[in-house]
Length: 70
Image (tube, rainbow, N blue to C red):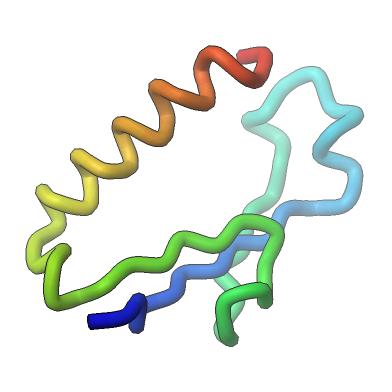
């Protein structure tokens, strides 16, 4: 199968200059794969539960932990 579910998230333009991420505004944006600043896409035939998606997102967060500052 192919990736058929897309969740796009936008972030406010000044987010990179803010010291506290609690003040950043995120918004879900309807659209195709490249519609937002962050896109999560997956194959709904393989990721059939929220638990499976959470596990995959946890792996992504672990990898990002070594690449980006907190």
